[in-house]
Length: 351
Image (cartoon, rainbow, N blue to C red; front, side, top):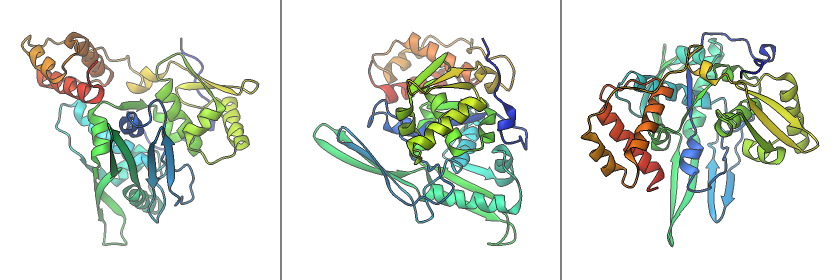
């Protein structure tokens, strides 16, 4: 049953038509083996430069996020990654080859993220790229009695082209995603966002939506304590300020996909699925059905080789459902299925 739609008056006006939005939960994709069952925010929710190192610890394992002198990447800077991921997903839908290198049309990106297209908006985009490039993640990974320390970033490099030299307007840029982000996409750690994500006015609202999208997903509801929600959000607000923000969000009822209920006595927040995700994924059309084409029976042996221990028919159902959810019609189904099984095994290991 679909609940009441969110309050559109509390959202930023929609400046440009939106396409489907995709985001990969890069934190979960890498850190799930380091800090199981925990969310790890590393984007700043402040509009002011944040230059302090963030550190999280759990059971002897740790994560540090180090900003550059220009500040930590913000949740608004994350828009660039969402754009890149959406471009890659669009190519996958069309059956095209993808790589870590993504060519960005600056004007298209600004429209895609519901921003203005004035000179200051292009300048802000350049600054965002620099903050993302400068943010570094360091974590230790233990295997037996050995400890490995890995250092990586969100993007490996960027190349910018401007009109009329260094002082001209940014036209295009090429971004090379890090292996960390690209592997998250390859391993299907991808969620579809509601197009109104870019219309949320406050950073904390975006972060709360992301948490609801990740933890509630398509379930009827998700309940979490205010204390845990605050921790997962990465907000620097005081308890009082955070509770006020959640209370206001519940009262205005403008969060996409989910209605928010705040039980002040129990100090619990409940996110209730509005039933709008299928519509937002397909732009208002009926949800895509799983792919119904046939596979050559010989391919199951190859699938067993790349995913030992797994029931290949179970993997086939998961693959078909994933194709349907992402509206992908594979041009080479057998090869695509084996690749899916390989990624599945790399991500989960033996059952």
